[in-house]
Length: 54
Length: 377
Image: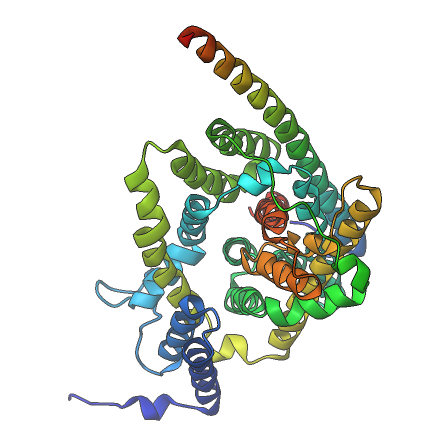
């Protein structure tokens, strides 16, 4: 059980908001990288498929 | 000796007030079409729960014989208080209904979605100073996420005694986005900023990216905050059903029939969780005011980060887009689009605002998961 104190409230606030920000930045970075990699892979794949056809 | 008693014998002024409030909800749903799918069953549930001597909210448990528990009591116990399965299924259905494409196309929207969660923490501090316990303050703060199911799930586990009020506040403020957000946005932005025209289209997002998104998000978030699994996990599971394209029937069921069934049960349950003795207190007004403040501060946080983006970005960026970071999908994004068009009719901000809007859903679920990881034992 967490004690009802101002120090605990500030700790929960700081850690909680910090955690939300860090996780969201991490997700943003991962999605940015994932987007770039998938786009590159799809370009290579479409070129390969076009090469196969010709 | 058999006896017959009418409900009038148990009716008092508090019940009458609650029945009147229930009628107001039904009026707003039908006449004003304010969140009718939520407010109509909540209003009806509230009336049923406050009609005396019905036993309809009697929950199953020791001393309650077979057939004695009321239907609303069963919904309350198994759907909201003990098993809390209803908000989790709502998240699953929302996942199946949500297109995360705008967020994948512009991942920096994640950070706008995070900034708008500041309202949760400011309202949390406010609630603590007004005398609420830490679990109650968490439940009140989470209203600022403008996310009904997260509010219900978190409150159901941390402070079930105020669940009816926090849930009603969350859904009511979501319905009032058009009233609450525009004055705040106008106060924090100049006319010139509101007129900023962003590029009309976001990049095309491939099917593979849309399939990878829920899988990666689920693994990362749940590994970091395991207690957010019932919310983020279910949201991403529903989204995977949608984007996989191979379980169309399941996805369509989640988006339509299942969502409708869960909505009926959840909203009736919320209405039923508001008996007069639990609601007619000064505390209730404080919860409503703090919830409103949380929502307002969330909007402020989003717009202020939007302004920073606007100053730093090489491409034109309209700071109003940040306001959509408070979940309230898709109303908050629509408000941004509406305000943008009002200032500059060539402005199409909807898709830009949808990114932070859906990021806000993930952000508030993470915030709820963190509160639960600390307090729900």
